[in-house]
Each structure stands twice: as structure tokens, then as C-alpha cells.
Amino acid sequence: MTSAKAIRLVWWRYFDVFRKNVGYSVVTTFVEPLLYLASFGFGVGALVPALQLDGISVTYRQFVLAGIVAQTVLFQAFFEAAYGGFVRMYYQRIFQAIAVTPITLSEVLWGELLWNTCKSGFAAAVVVLIGCTIGDFHWRGALFILPVIILGALVFASMGLLVAARSRSIDNISFPQFLLVFPMFLFCGVFFPLEQLPSTIQSLVWVLPLTPLVSLIRSLMLGLPLFWPAWLILILWAAVLVPIARRAMRARLVK
Amino acid sequence: MDLLSVDRLKKAYQSRGREPFWAVKGISFTLGPGECFGLLGPNGAGKSTSMNCITGFYQASEGAVRLMGFDVYAEPRQARQYLGVCQQEDTLDSDFNAFDQMVRYASFFEIPEAEARTRTQTLLNRFGLSDKAREMVEELSGGMRRRLQVARALVSQPRILVLDEPTAGLDPEARRQLWDIITEYRAQGNSILLSTHYMEEAERLCDRVAIMHQGLILDVAPASELIAKYIGTQSVEEEIRPGLLWKRLPNLEDVFLKLTGSHLQEDSEE
Image: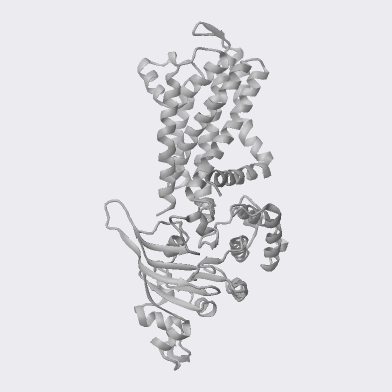
């Protein structure tokens, strides 16, 4: 068995669970972004005039819908990895069970990360599809968005896995949830342009991984100029978080 | 050829700012074809740490473990292809029903699905769980869950079955059921490595017993030989109530007491 096959077998276990509980899976994966879209896109969007971004006029619905794609990536990847990962590691002991078969713990953790990344990607792709269907997004941008979504999902899945590995109890996950994930969700450009923030805060939020993700998605989907350093920031986050998260989970499991 | 050889295995737990704690201090033994080998000792003796090192889940600090000739740390995939593991903790996958989780587990050994389904049905029948095949794990009793976990470990038809405290926490009836299953499996010529803190379990199931205490194996031999060597064959007197003496045959508990000065069960409750 190759490592790639071992990881695929682990991934397939997650997909099998997703498929068996398809009703629950669809609700928990796709309903939340649709609710945000309905509330902010159609509700708030009707009250807010068009915005000028890099000299291009976009409606608030277009603006916020691109943010909701990024927010979907964040929430789906982080919560699945943090809460789901903690349950699988601590209560179900799934990692421990698989890691005594011919599949190694390293491959189990890759399977976990890739599943969380893919699940988040599925959900974000649905929002992109809706945006294209209602005419808010460029179809051409949708072709290039996938690598961005996958990279962002990998970053937040790693963040979630790191949180799961470091949390003593499931309640402890609330700390990074309220102190990092929700502030990112509110202040990294999902709902309003970063120019509304004081300049020092703007610099700060550019360090966080959601800001470059929002920027890249918005640029690609609305046909705005790309801010290339955003790629670099995201890649740096992935390069740092993926090995740290894997090492932390390994340290938690293997004494 | 030995199916399993453990050579001077040591394991230390490191914690920041503290001296390493040596849970296993250099144990060696082998497991032959068709043999049931038991590690007997109280909780904290180092049995589960040893088991985790033998399955390759923990990296040993020193020493070597070879399964079917493969180094479990350098060649984990090849080594574990021959291994079926029932861990001490309940590691059943609560996202699947009894049947599906065995089929899914078999996939980790690259067993084709049709073959996995046949084997699963056979094992569920043999373990008295066929009527529970479509039930989720949380709907099963403790004894059924344990039987299912052992059945799952057998779905790959391993050459070596590793059972870490297989009957811990089970009621006497469920324990006896599991003993019967293990005895039957053993009678088919399969090899078993078992850890337990129940002396009756070790006496009943194991060809050879290793008395384990504070990370060391104090002696290894068939239970009857250990008893004869350390206690003798004469009945021993035990005070079962103040002033009330009872004569009984000597057992491994007496051996453990003689070797360590403490009881198996007393230590297990710590």
C-alpha cells in the first residue's frame, strides 16, 4: 500500500460517514452559508448602496457574497477540525484505532486534514455556484477559485486540528473560537471594506489568514485587481500551521 | 520462527522540567506459533505501554520489536499487516453500525469489500452478534461492544492477536463469554498476546505468563510452573474473615504477592 492509498482510505472513511448521514451532513454543511447569504446578501444588501472598489462598482450583495465564501471556508474547516477532530481523537479514539492497522498515524492525520479541507471546499463551492447562478460572480473567476479555497481550507483545518490537539476538554475550544475565529469573521473584510478600520488595525488584520483569503476570493469572483501578497500570506500560514498542527496532534496521542 | 520478538524494550515518558519516567525498563520475550502469551500485572505495571510499543503506536525509547520478522518501527505497514489489535479503551467507531464498521476496518488492510462482508458476517455469527449487525455502537451493551472490538480485530485474519485487558470492566458473564471466544480462537492454532490484571484470566488462557511489575518482567513460565516454583503444590491458608481460615490451591496471585509484596487487585484499584 502506498501512502497516497492509505490517506485515501482514511479520507474515504470520512466520506462514508458523510454519505451515510446525508441529511445531517447537508444541513450542517450547506445551510449556514445559505442563511448568511439570504440575510446579508438579500436583506442587508437591499439597504446598502453600491460600493466603489478599485474603481469598479459592485453591489453590496456581490461584495458580501464573496466574503461569505471565505467565511464558509473558515467555519466549515475550523469547526469540523476543532470540534470534530476533538471528538474523533478524545471520545471516539478513531485515530488510535486506525493507527494500529497498516495505516500509520501520520497518514491518519493527513486523511483527517484533507477531509476537513475537502468538506469545507464543497460547502464554499456551493456558495460560489450560487453566486455565479444569480449573476453576482464571474464564471471565469470560478474556474480559478478552487486552489484559493483549498489553500484557505487547509489553513483553517490545520488551525482547528491544532486547537483540538491543545484543548484539554471540548469546552476549551471556545477560547480560540471567541478570541480568534469570531474576530476574524467580523473584522477581516467579510462584511465591510478594510478601509473602514483604523490604519493600525488594518495592518493587524492583514496578518490574519482570513483577510488574504477574502481579498483573493473577492478579486477573482468580482474581477478586481489581485493583491498578490495575499497569496504569500496564505501560503506562509499553511507552511507554518500544517506541520505544527500535525506535530501537536501526534504529541497528544503518542506519549 | 517466532511470530513476535520483543528485545530489551524500554519506554520512558518525558515531561518538561521533570526526570523521565521509565514505564517499561527493558523487557524481552517471544511469541511462538499457536501460543497464548500473557503479561500479568496490576495497573501501572507497564503492560499497556508495552502493548502500545509492540503495536508500534508508541515509539520505544530503546530496544526492538519484530513482528513476523519486520521491525515494527522501521516497517510498520508490513509488520502490522499481520496484527489484529483490541486496545484497552473502547475504540469502536460510533459513526458506523456493527457490520459496516468491520467492513470499513477491513478496508484499512486492503481487503476487498465483498471478502470483508463475508468475513464480517462469519465473525458476527461466531461472536453471537449477528442480530446486532445493524445496530450502532451506543446501542450495544458493554460486553457486546467488547466482543465486537475483538471481532473487528480478527477481520483481517491476523497471525497475531493483541488483546490489551480484554475483559477489564466486564461483568462475570460477559467475561466468560469472551474467554470462550479467545479459547476457541487459540484452539485453531492462532497466536495471542494478552495483557491482564486478572490472575484467573491469565491462568485460564495463557500458555506462558510473564509476571510484570514496575516496568519489569520478573519471571516467565507456564502458570503451573510459576506456582510450583514460588509457592509449591500444597494448599495455602487464607484468612477470608478475621479468625476464619480457608484452605485453597495456590494461584498466580500468591506468586505475585511472593515476588512483589503486593496484590494484583489492590494495585489495580490505585
